Image (cartoon, rainbow, N blue to C red; front, side, top):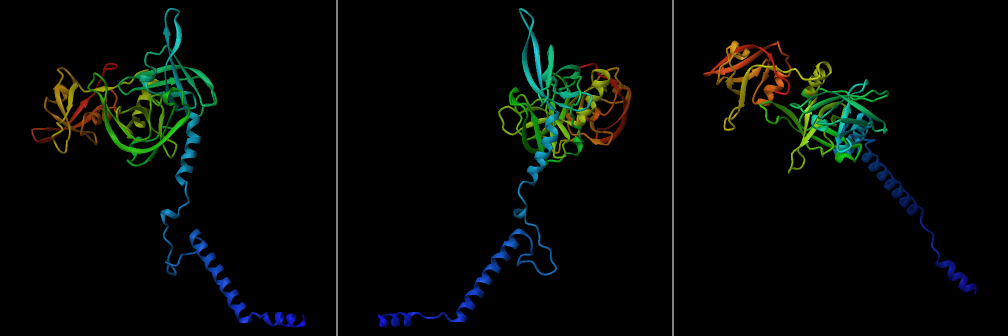
Amino acid sequence: MDGQDHCSWQGKRRVPLWYVFVAGLCGVLAGFLLLYFFLCRQGAIPGPDVLPGEERQEDPADRLPGEEDRATVDVVGRVMPAVVAVNCYISARPYDQLILSGSGSGAVISEDGYIITNQHVIDGAAKVMVVTPDYRSFEAKIIGEDKLTDLALLKVEGTGLIHIPLGNSDAVQVGETVLAVGNPLGFLKHTVTRGIISALEREVRSAYSQYAYTYIQTDAVINPGNSGGPLVNLKGEVIGINSAKISGAEGIGLAIPANTVKRVVDDLKRDGRVRRPQLGIWVENQPESLSPRRGVNIKEVIAGSTAEAAGLKDGDVITAVGEKEIRYVAQLFDALLNYYPGERIELTVERDGQSLEIAVVAGEAAPEE
């Protein structure tokens, strides 16, 4: 038994101290390397590819996720309380009961209760009710409507209404992030979709009229019920009023530019209608085959008009209004909407290969002409 104990003791070998020291040093180095790469990953210290005295270039992949998302959430929080449902009612026989005929959207644009929406939303309505996101309901008065721009101005008598400002649509850029806010299908209240500005100055013609205006194109989803709701930028400004989508196509929505909205709102507040200048001419676009297409053809100068008095002739091509270059009809009517009847309008026209400056004193177009 003593022999067994002795043999057992002889089998145990001591670990050399140098071995313990080396193992400990390796562990420390491994921990240091792990910490170093962790800090590099977090950006707390420069990585091994950065020379002394140089700043590490930010890699888009290293940015904290959700920066644009947070901006979007902030804008939606400020804009959504100012977007309302616009419910329209018509009188139905035999008892002349009011029944819901359709719903759209609207944007509160002033603290005293003015609301902008599309004209086609409220067209023919006997009664218009506005519902706010906090489920307050107001009967709205129709201040005025304009079929040619598809805009209508409503007014409600309420307090504590949150409103959103109209921005400068001339400053909008293609590729800019935008949000469309409204009530698609009439019952999906308080919906927001996100997209970009796809194109600017898309020509949209008024039905049965020579009038045309430019619209903003976006790929933010716009559905029936979104009509009249705002298209906003990431500053929380209304840059357009959503009006239509191209049927049979995906991701092509159209919004009326905010600068057009401003002019129409001012006129509807003051006069109940838009006061348009009239030159006394019929116009048409240049043929598509011309590249680049430049200017608008005058098909006919109306006898006795201010255009005739100013010296405009059939076949003249309008290439500019003031400083604004004109390439097609919608741009012409956009530019004219900056003037009022009685004002002097400077036109640049081409005639027989020569460029002429002709000033026309604007007459006044008949309502809805």
